[in-house]
Amino acid sequence: MQYTVPHYYKKFSCTGSACPDTCCAGWQIQIDPSSLKRYRHTEGPIGNRLRNEINWRKRSFRQYKGRCAFLNDENLCDLYLEGGGEKAFCRTCRTYPRHIEEFEGLREVSLSLSCPAAAEMILLDRTPVHFLHAEDDRSDEEYPEFDFFLFTKLEDARSLMLQILQDRKEPFRARAAAVLALAHDLQQRIDRNALFAVDSLLTRYSSPGVCSWFSDRLDGLAISKEERERTADSLFVILRRLEVLRPDWKTYLRDARRTLEDAAHATREPQRPFHEVFTDVMTEQLLIYFIFTYFCGAVYNRNAYGKLKFALASTLLIRELVRAEWIKTNGAVSSGYAVEAAYRYAREVEHSDFNKCRMEEMLGDEEKFGLEQMLALL
Image 1 (tube, one colour):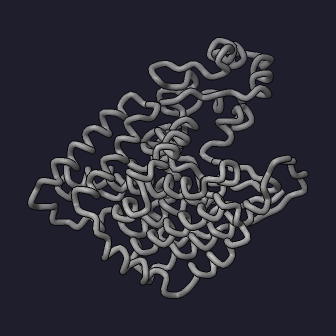
Image 2 (cartoon, rainbow, N blue to C red; image 1 turned 30 degrees about the vertical axis):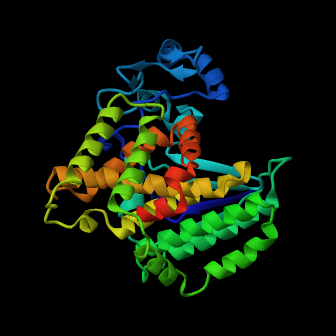
Image 3 (spheres, rainbow, N blue to C red; image 1 turned 90 degrees about the vertical axis):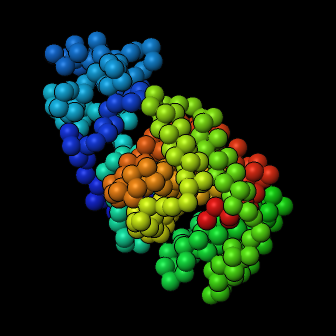
């Protein structure tokens, strides 16, 4: 079995009680069958507590006021402290914040943006992301209907996308536009079952002047400010139609959108430029995170363009949430708020399969989220 991880993966360390938004609260923690069996037969005081604090029908830990029953007042885990350390964890607690995407013969492991410590590593590290590879003797699982040829083309396209996005000599908006257009053109070949034509497409997008071409195209887009605002508002409409995981999320979204709408009619902006608060490097790192994590999943639904639009929309929405706070505080917002906006977004969207699928589906509306409309948001 082969494994791929981002270069910062092994640097991760849980901040424990210092975490500003513990992963032991705000959602149900599901327990895998093997751990349930072990917990049922655990002896002693911790065993008695386990039997009382597990909802055996739902196969999850009980919660009190949104907090796991084993999360103590110091925001530490009693199961860890009293049960012998990490070996007492179920699979969910042992794995998080690691996120695993599974393919035939390959596991791609990332750190989830929903973890504050991971979000800080992803957004605030200026080092261009690179990926580490390893292999072990574990036998590969079989995927009878896995389209390996499509997967190799998706991998090749993703590699070129990351290469384009990390060319910091070029304006970020031109890099992002090139990547979006590449996914659009790739999707056309997937839909026509013309994967044999993907190599020539990648060669075309590898040409040295590709970002300059897209920079000129962005400057020439005939889309009004009102149309751009309408597309941005449509992205927020998507968020409002998703499953809500945390009770304060809708209020948070509504306040941010109201601030942005009011600012659209203002004549002055905060003196501190927004690009100093939410830099192009942050935007790059976020977009690379989403592309690495989800793009190759198109091997299962053949929707590469949808995966890329999900990645770009998520990046832009997080940026807009930060921009709302920048406006509200008259520019007095730190990079730490960008981290907070990112992990709050990720906890709502990435931790619900329904939300991810629904968002990808809604982004398929080409009248609202066509190539030019998405390009205009850059």
